[in-house]
Image (cartoon, rainbow, N blue to C red; front, side, top):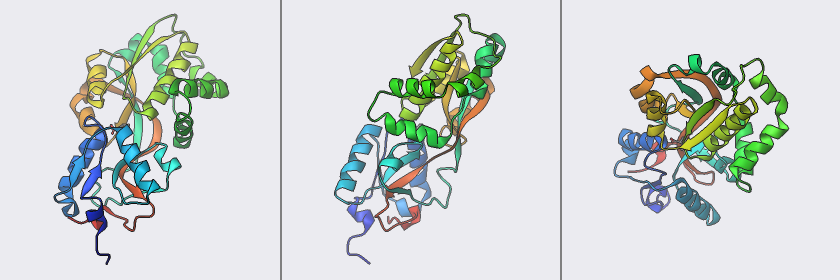
Length: 267
Ligand code: PBE
């Protein structure tokens, strides 16, 4: 037993992200669920602030507990591990799902058919997110499209042309969704669609598609991360495709920390 526990060293604090994130809601539930997190503070701020704190801690080999997720470059840049979650309060493996408003398929068959086919491996997306640290998301999206025209051709094959029809896509402001949104936009534009991308908070993504303010989103993390938003609006949402499989959220710590589970933390 060390004299100062890891939990004391991190001042019983979880470094979180934006208040509106699904991962933030899940972290609030997690603090409620585990006795080991009794009295812990879940500090909410922003993804950028969390990444700065994480990078600083790793530089000094100090302990830190953050809200983490995959796909994200944090797991490529640093040696991190998820803490085991025996209560399953963060869910398990997730699908980043494409949702459309009811009626979109009938009114815009071509775009719907293309969205049904658009998807990526999680490793491809992680690689692109790492590239997006040194270039803009728009540039990275364009170069992936340029390098993968055969794949894009498969997405577009036999779908009716857009002839200038507009497709309004909403997305959340995280890199993974900014990348997939931009790649989908470029593919749809090749087929004669005009595409608007609007970044908003997760709650607004679901509300916007459900009310028909926008046509579709590639940003729904299901079943857990955005599960409550989906439940609220599912009567007015159509599941189009699981564009990315194997996404995940949870508490993450540097590998050098000598704990493996949320239950190893101490109240
Ligand atoms: N995330 C990244 C978001 C969705 C994409 C996991 C931080 C969230 O709503 O929690």
